[in-house]
Image (cartoon, rainbow, N blue to C red; front, side, top):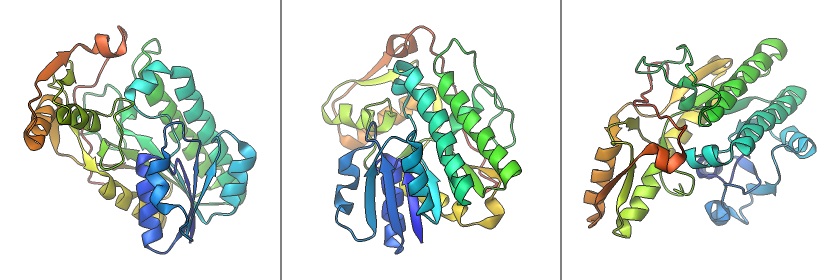
Length: 294
């Protein structure tokens, strides 16, 4: 089987490439390396089942050619990370919305099954926990920049479902919760690699807010396993699935665990959200998936 992975040099995309190649499939990774990294796929260079195209996801001609040559498509290319979302809101929205439109149009043209990766951010400020796939999406106001990411991803989902209903394109949507593991970088705000880097340097671990907010973390290999199964399951087409872990941990407790496991001399430094991300930033207190559907 031939697979196209957009965002294939990214954190999750590179692990997905590893897993597919390990099963004997061929992989074409497409990435513009704006957030993806060469070192994530360096070990695959020269492998007979792997190839890479350096291109912008907005390039319709290249995307069309890549999709035409694939049997299945994983669309992971996206702007990622809270810091990038807040600091570059235009790039975030345009990359997500236009990029997905280009990919879906090509998949529709060539009738290729596609898995679209979405995010737990689409649940927004919903007070219903855990979040299930059929829950309402409660997005914050447009002047608050962090909601641009959630709205863009939600629009991607609506567009994908429109292609499913109108054109019968085989589509699966996976809402990813917090994913962690090797190759993840803290450059754009990901909390675990940031904490680990600070702890190894014996620097204070910066916890935003009071640290009581909780998240559920899932290892990237478990996430990849879920993605692979969903795309091959005919019954999953036209549906949305949460992928993650439902064990909550507070961010302060996470910081304490990292300090303990690294035997670091670091302390914990509480930083107001507005100091980190600006005065209009707001966060979600809990983000827990209902995993009963999978």
